[in-house]
Length: 168
Image (cartoon, rainbow, N blue to C red; front, side):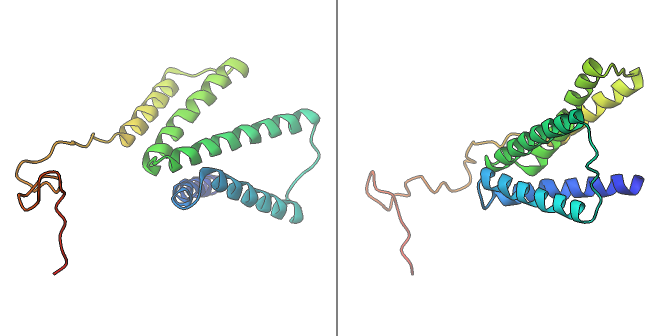
């Protein structure tokens, strides 16, 4: 079981990096379409190999479909975040930290689950850790007075005219 979980974690990590990379070249919408097509192909492999069990109740089909649609919307939102110049390290980390919070709240509200103090502390530490990992120091926009400013007039051009370098 641990090997399957570890493999899933690796696959999700590669998936997140691939999401960011695809949105560098195509839109979030087309990235999402490629995700759906890939998912359908994998599902077909499961059906052909006989690994899919179709003996399901109507409730299971409805809840599974709802879960799939909500997951799809989450994936589409992450593609949109990546394509809006979101860094993979930030988008993935923040989504990974906050998604379990909603899961836990829903489990407490609808499944009557409870958390011990140590579990609550662990969850809080995981969220703080993920947010800390995603933090970036703001970049200063101040110009260093000792570095040349390419927008400053060097005196070799007429007022209002931008200086351009001529090839040698």
